[in-house]
Length: 116
Length: 116
DNA sequence: CAGAATCCTATCAGATACTG
DNA sequence: CAGTATCTGATAGGATTCTG
Image (cartoon, rainbow over all chains, first blue to last red; front, side, top):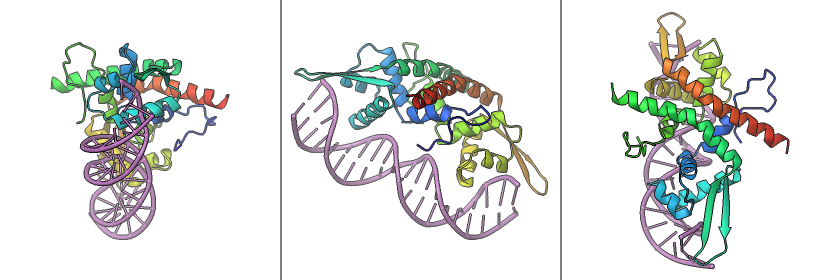
């Protein structure tokens, strides 16, 4: 961790954003979270289609990191053909909700950009 | 831009987060924004101290990018010794506000992490 | 004081090919 | 289908030195 936040900072307003940034700091991670939230189908192949442009390798590694960070759960069913499903954990759901205002900001900005 | 959002997406729920991520996607950017919001002094040297670990080069380049993105304003006073002050623009203030919930999430997470 | 210039390296992400 | 393995290229970030 490269965080600057010593937990229990003296003055009481450490920012906590950097903690969040470490979790969502991959190029595609927020898109993955978003897809996981919006879309009912959570299979690997579906996600690959939902996040156009991402490669299998990057999707796989991002999913593993998100899992390690406790925001994504991976359910593997031992079948043939193999089936694996990904879903947001409770924490992941709350993270997504916290991303809402940021998404609004980005949307407004995109609109403002176009109309000037 | 590597964004995947075509403005005016057909179904109406493009996410907009990636737009925001391009703005805050530097390692120290949110910390800079935070410092600019919290701290009255906005001089280069002060910022350097407020964001411990950042190098001058990275601080300078991040500030320039934030400025180009319209979230930071740079006021240069032609004096000796030179004085330059940075401040959030209106957009920057709103961006910071949008970062609030994310900061809360990160803080909660940090606490939860420690108590398990 | 507020940076610019240069050089360097680690990490990330893409392409391609292969496997249980 | 759901990945893994390997190689390669881009680029962000760091260290150091210099300047108006």
